Image (tube, rainbow, N blue to C red; front, side):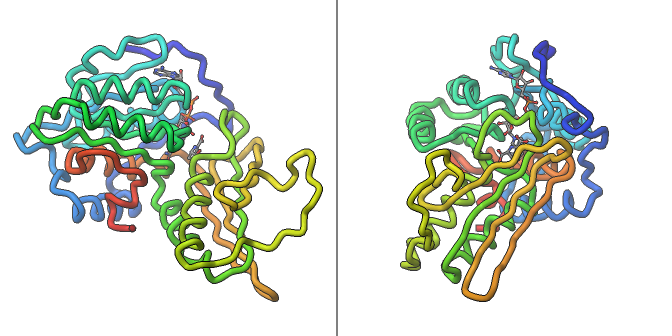
Length: 300
Ligand SMILES: NC(=O)c1ccc[n+]([C@@H]2O[C@H](COP(=O)([O-])OP(=O)(O)OC[C@H]3O[C@@H](n4cnc5c(N)ncnc54)[C@H](O)[C@@H]3O)[C@@H](O)[C@H]2O)c1
Ligand SMILES: O=C(O)C1=N[C@H](C(=O)O)CCC1
């Protein structure tokens, strides 16, 4: 199966040639964390390879995920699907990796869940209404081939540094009067704000609410064109689209006389692959819906 769609590529946006190898430090650390949190860091209970399908295989992330799965011992790629392809039985996959567009993702995930296929979702756009529908679909789903419930992971960001940056931001947020999020991405990105920024803002807002921290000070009374960005749960998020960038985020935290800046940079899509592989290995051990890879890695 091939992806016949026209994913925009440029020198900046094209997936890098490298493959996420299990030999890199990040890959090893994420794999170790996943192994500690999961009994599925081996192929399958039956001892055979875990079979994987990639949906959105012709896209920037999908192509990188195909390379990573093919390079990983214990995983076997059994299907690659693009926008023109019928998903069918997903080639008999145990796990599907879904990396498409926000408009297509819920339908693809529902298709997998209805067939008892576990899903690792990197696509953005999963707001509360979509998550709620997915929970209902999971409750009505048949068991997976292993007999346990189907697992779905919605992962706004697979990069271990991004997960840590988000956790640090949530931890720091109640200690500062002001906090704003700036996300910066390649210009071919179709959605704004980024899924990572939306989740970071939600985590920050939840952490401040729990601590009873007041809303950040802001004297703005006139902003007809949205210069202050969008408010996600009361936290301002600003989106930059710039040729040359991949995926970057800053969380700015301010008090009188001091500032803490937390910044994460994904310079290359290989940064996401250790997380994708860890998620593929662990998803069957986490029936139901999980939002955030940090819950598989013991970072929560
Ligand atoms: N979670 C993460 O760490 C992470 C990292 C990078 C990107 N993303 C997200 O992943 C998604 C994909 O990003 P990208 O840069 O690869 O985009 P892209 O545009 O390069 O690729 C998307 C691919 O999906 C295909 N597609 C569209 N509709 C489809 C359908 N119905 N069925 C199958 N395939 C379909 C397109 O043809 C395209 O090839 C975006 O939502 C992006 O924000 C997440
Ligand atoms: O390149 C993208 O598109 C990315 N999407 C995710 C998001 O929206 O947060 C993760 C970072 C890269």
